[in-house]
Amino acid sequence: MPLGNPPAEDRDDFTAALPPELFQKIKTIQIRTQRTVNDVFAGEYESAFKGRGMEFEQVRDYHPGDDIRHIDWNVTARMSAPFVKEHREERELTVMLVVDVSSSGAFGSVAKLKNEVAAEIAALLAYTAIKSNDRVGLIIFSDRIEHFIPPKKGRSHVWRVIRDILAFRPTLRTTDLVGALEFLNKVSRRRTVTFIISDFLDTGFVEQFRVTARRHDVTAIAVGDRREQKLPPIGLIELEDPETGRTILIDTYDKNVTGGFEMLSGEDRAGLTDMFRAAGAGEVRILADDRSYVDSLVRYFHAREKRR
Image (tube, rainbow, N blue to C red; front, side, top):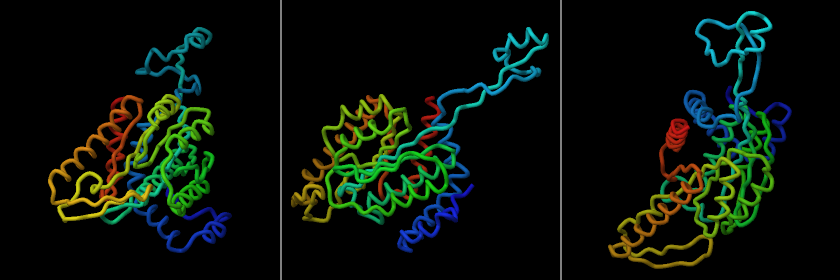
């Protein structure tokens, strides 16, 4: 079922709270992803993230070909005929979207900023989770918890989540992943499927990440930009850290400089990957200029399903 327009009872409040261009952006995201979600994405998501187990539903007559391991011997003995137990998957999950809006995300060397891509991914995951009848909650953070929506179901709720993700306007702040993870653990007492969407340009969060990954089913979606990995040969450029304001002037014609930059960047990415793996968390790498981050997510879901 498509996301459609906001429910009639919420439509006036919803549209009044949004500039027309933002409302149109939300609709555009829905239209662009709806076919993919319906045809591919939702199925891969449901296969990758199973429910909490199987729940007994009923006993029925045995039919030739049924697995004899499912025979209910007590009922069979009473009825003098074979009966089998039927179970259904307890599908409902709680999905938490933890979205980094710190100022390091306000960078993009092509068409979109990292923060814009992160918001679109979060919106897509929210829509997919609701379509799969899961509950969805939202934590938006920078160096503090900027916004929190407790998990709920329903079309009206997912409109609110998507609206708040795309409408949020962060101040220029640093990143505090430890604070975000501690807040997640505080508000989510039970195990959740958690997507942390960030560029992970922070330090000192490894231990708290490990604690969180033990309590929840965590996937780290690392959003970056190609220019954070490799610098083009264009001469002197000034690089600024958007979170601290510190600047440095470098010569991109100097191969020692650019080579060192690439090496350090690669080491940082490899270190994060090792940390995610050691913590038992999943990892998806997205570049802000990727034409289709959906493909990257589908590949991850498919690989996760095969591992299961």
